[in-house]
Amino acid sequence: MKYLLNLRTAVVVNRVTMGVFFFLSGIANYLNFSVTNGFYQTVLTQKLQIIGPGIPPGWEGVGPLPWLIAIPYGWLLPLAEIVLGALFALNFWVRWTGLLLILMTFSIILAFGIIPAGSLFPNAAESFNKNILFMTLIWMCIAYDAYEQKMSRRRTQVAADYTLTASNDDM
Image (cartoon, rainbow, N blue to C red; front, side, top):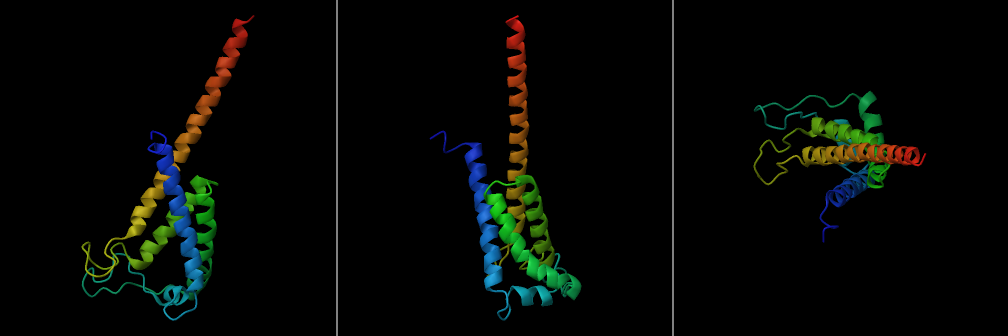
């Protein structure tokens, strides 16, 4: 039981879950790419909400994005979700893929608002921005990866020091 309930297992499950989520999200964005009100049309026409709709009253946001930014963003964001999600889930370059996932998620928050439905409380619309939670979970994976690398270097140094001390004692 102690092996199931440890920090490493929790972080690995969290990392794989986040990576698979982004991987599947990228695939879903490409599957719904050119349908009416699909991903591409939303990127080209959506006004940037930043805070959220209705906050302050009557504020409709800015935008939409200029075509020079919106077209590459619309085509490359799903690809980035697929590639970065797979790398993150498979434990490749966790620090860098995690940072890119956080930046990508932050761009989604800027597009749809911090409080997408304009309220922190349930009102038959998405009221809590899960992206903030995702950014926090990704950050925890990055921090744990950095900690593990630091501890690995320390263990290697201690083992080298011990070997050096043991060989000096033999003389």
